[in-house]
Picture 1 (cartoon, rainbow, N blue to C red):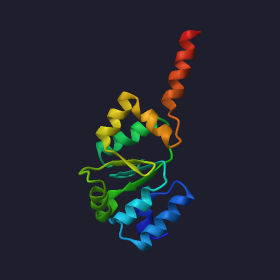
Picture 2 (picture 1 turned 90 degrees about the horizontal axis):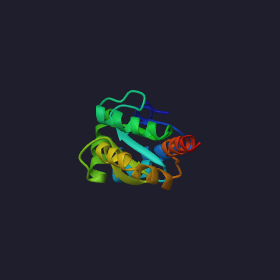
Picture 3 (picture 1 turned 180 degrees about the vertical axis):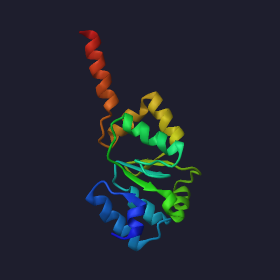
Length: 150
């Protein structure tokens, strides 16, 4: 794997690496084709500053923490600080001016503020379910409810 590929993505499955290779050799990292290839058919993709293990801004960290609270451990994370073309390209693709940017099932959801509001309202649980992810918060609420009724 090239040094550029290692910097761009934290691979979470074989499909990610394959799609990234195709996108890498067929389009610039900031192109619409590249971004589409990266987000297509994946449950959760985050374009962020830093990595989930070492976020480089508070908003990126907040997105990581919200996903973690829901039990989302495996998702594609792309460090835009490693590639200015990707950073600008994802902003152009979504017409959204800030990073981080979150996609569910290939659909742009929003940034940190939108994800936080979805988390507070409970809408995030429904959106995660649409992409095949059951939130741990639903499971925890059910367990607590069962305990209270006993």
